[in-house]
Image (cartoon, rainbow, N blue to C red; front, side, top):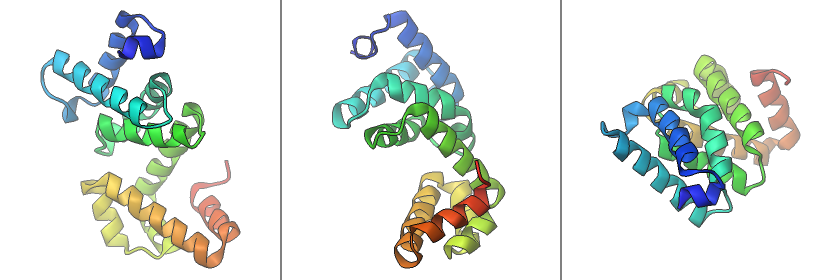
Length: 166
């Protein structure tokens, strides 16, 4: 199914999924066939359920895989993030670059993020280590609340200060 969805040969698709399996080896089973099958199933399901494409998700996961894996995200979680961002119209190149920057800055400056977003710094730091998806959700929720109370311009200024003007 995945090969036809990507307009690529089965060999190229297997190679792409094999590379992803190597990056996320800690969160997948030991058997290479199981790894590739699990990844293919996750991508198929997301492509069926959302306005996302397998090639777009492959591109995103290949670009973000190293950071995502090192933070403890699974391939399924990273592919889901890819699908969400693609579904709202963000190209894989921009989405993966932005998420890499956010996650790396969060790890380096979690206290600054916590202070700027009125989140408990210890809770955020712990979540980043133990449950990175929950940490990201916590940050996104706090950003939404800040944007609602202080306005989007104030939120953007604060994020630019934390992340640097790109």
